Amino acid sequence: METRPSSSSAPPAMNLNLDNIRALQLLGKGATGTVFLVHDSVSDPSASSPFAMKFVDKPSASSLRRANWEIQILRRLSDDPDPNPFLPRLLTSSESPEFVAWAIPYCSGGDLNVLRHRQNDGVFSSSVIKFYLAEILCALDHLHSMGIAYRDLKPENILLQESGHVTLTDFDLSCTLNKPTRPEFYLSDPEPEPNPESKLSRLRFSRQKKKTKSARVNPITRRRMSFSGGDRSNSFVGTDEYISPEIIRGDGHDFAVDWWALGVLTYEMTYGETPFKGKNKKETFCNVLMKEPKFAGKPSDLTDLIRRLLVKDPTRRLGYRRGAAEIKEHAFFRGVKWDLLTEVLRPPFIPLRDDGESNGNVTASGFGIKDYFEKLKTNPLPLPHECSENNPFVDF
Ligand SMILES: Nc1ncnc2c1ncn2[C@@H]1O[C@H](COP(=O)(O)OP(=O)(O)OP(=O)(O)O)[C@@H](O)[C@H]1O
Image (cartoon, rainbow, N blue to C red; front, top):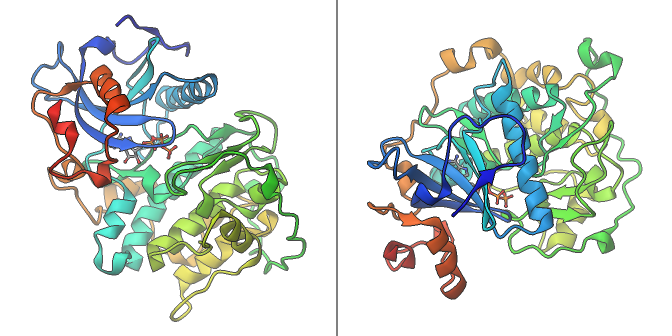
């Protein structure tokens, strides 16, 4: 297989010939790509330094555009002179007639969704939530400071490194926006007022064209994707239960969509379910626009934080005026040493050696990526969470 360098301009961090890549395990499958744990059979025949690689098979024009966009964002993160410890870096990328593919470090701890389901009652304690939120908040803060709105925050996209610290993944829905110019963004500011919920009415479901297989896996995209622009974006992107009211309304949106999603995520970590889930997409969107989240139990700093993030009017949402700084000052984070997160805080869960292997079968000799996709055409494989002892995957 002949590969040519990916269309992005900067040199790759490592050289890669896709023909030499052998997959050890299927790590995950999303709407756009398939992610494998792989090794280079020539430079690393014993697979002592495996890494994760995302493949977009036979990309259409739009998936190629999205893939190249994700590569571009990852490259920007890698070139950052002051990289954030909770964001990934690009190891290399490659493009062939069959695939566009790129490599990032392997996160052996799986994702936050899997970890939550392993907990008693499927929820995290308040101190565990504080740990993960602090790291996610720092990652989002860093992205925003680079003018990048993430737009796909959900537990499935929060991976756990071998050290137990988080890494955000999946940047194909992100977009660049002008950095906030609100003068008060960098000044101290009073707490936002309660949301009057004044003008929530204009639903535009008819605009949504794409069907999704699973709300949690597949992002939805209305209109042609717009990756970069001015102060606000008008794309309809995200995962149903995490989509903000302003995106549903088609009002245009900015960095505050990430603070909304942070509220949904915090709610899900606290209660084991998202706050606005309906029987179907339409009901979910109605709930996002109209329904107030329900809080069981006594009010606390945690519920107050969620309530302030889930304010439907983005201009009154915590984080709108002064970004992450405003959220970091919330009482829930009292005592967090923001500058020393990786040094002071011990991660609540350190992945076991085989954590990342529990989702599927690791094949000793590995299997070819091309063979995998060929075989997939004739014999559709189960998703990783459906893998069983009968998994045809082991035939490779
Ligand atoms: N570096 C990594 N280490 C371990 N597992 C990973 C890594 N990157 C991705 N995965 C797994 O693969 C899954 C799919 O990856 P990703 O979200 O990037 O694909 P996608 O096609 O863009 O998905 P989506 O439908 O959310 O857009 C993740 O949820 C995760 O379980």
